[in-house]
Length: 337
Image (tube, rainbow, N blue to C red; front, side):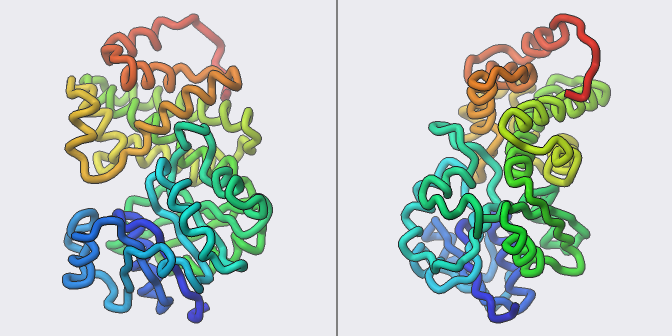
């Protein structure tokens, strides 16, 4: 395994964390960096001052702005980019992929234009990725806690058991436990959709609501995630796992969550555009809300929380009115879905 060469695309907090973790295991890791200024700081200071301040990175890490250099000759290529730029970067790098390289998506989002998951975008580029050599990594994993070597568990999913098992072995450490799954649809959707519910819980907390409200949003939000997941071919049980309930609880209950933070500020009356302008990282839930809203409409899936979050984010509906709309819906019998 130590002979594995790893390319990581995206030097945000999570991409940098994974690069450092793998370098600490003695693997040869090349990290692709978008910003020239950040590239120079990484080379000179061994610290990602923009996205992961205070963490000294492994001296063996290599850095580049060349996609070709990042992927050529690599055994594993990890994608940790914003979901809305994944298609472009994947397409540009595709000519340089080694045939047997395993592609791993560690991003959590759904493309706005096509309403496709990242594995589906990869399949658009090369149909062979449907059944082999494409893996999704997801689960409750704040980058800073992984950097601080706090115990963490995540899941890797692929239709190809061998690819999932290979990535499980490559990435596991004594403090990062990796599980495997074959439900790539469920694992991808869980990682993406939970961000919408995190925005919703942030809004509720920003409005001054309490723990009862948060618990209701998490529970009914999980039901929405499962409904859409089933409609798209996911296994319901997957949403009870790390990429579903695990990640949902984490992002809905911690101020470290970017998506929760965006929601909290909206609940306090701040405009979405201003919030996003002031952030130095991407809150995927803002974009995924749009994708999930239209996916739900196309599949005729009821997602009332997602609908009101969409209306708050994109139609300027006042947040208190959104809550009132949710609470005044027709009374129903509770079901898990």
